[in-house]
Length: 323
Image (cartoon, rainbow, N blue to C red; front, side, top):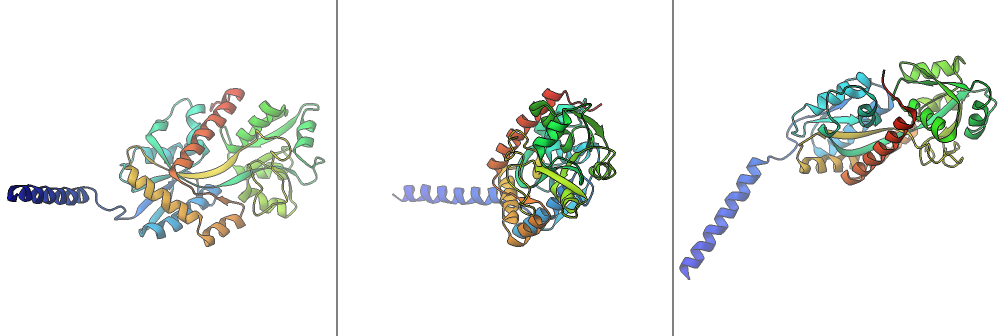
């Protein structure tokens, strides 16, 4: 009996030592500041969502989160930096639709899609279809019908693969709109082109579009997401107007380098979700036209898969390529 007790005690001691060794091998995360790389310039929808997520997640995790802007290459510069970072939970990417669509339209890519792992959804800014304030059409149906007459309309984008480019692609391939695509370097240039009546229409993130709409400088024809914008509920969605395939938004999520431990990914996802459910942060985002989302890793993975399929269909239908 004494031998049995000795064996049992030895086994218990070994288990305790193993548990201690495992804990030492996997130190608590995070133990130092975290970086979030934004592949856009400061001040836009993606940047604003990144800073809101960083603020809330930092409080949940108990460590500083530093937001760094690395614009360029249609998000490839910042995304490549994260894809090639150590998968240790201290570098994350604030992702957007371009992170999914770039490999579909660009001839070469510095990293593979699989080099980045989805972590969490932050939020989204629905795209708003915009025309001059005195345009004669009151909704998307009238705009599409008018475009089919004569030579069609000039539609401004922020470049190949930009969100306005995808909006125009759906309008053309799904609903027969006759649009001549005019690429500009940024969404602000596209807005100015509509204001100056150099083009007939564009679409832009709600955070950018709403000030022009509320001031009467531009007319909004539709919100291109699945629900009305909290800050401007009087604008109906494209789906409500009968254009259910027009489902495009300026969204922001979090991706991590491939190989980042699942426990870290789960903890970051929970922190971002908590941030988006913080009343102060959520209300601040809604006030400027951004819808906070949050959710789990699983729900974001599902969103990414659906977005990849949806955008891929538009790329194929339009032959969209980055020249």
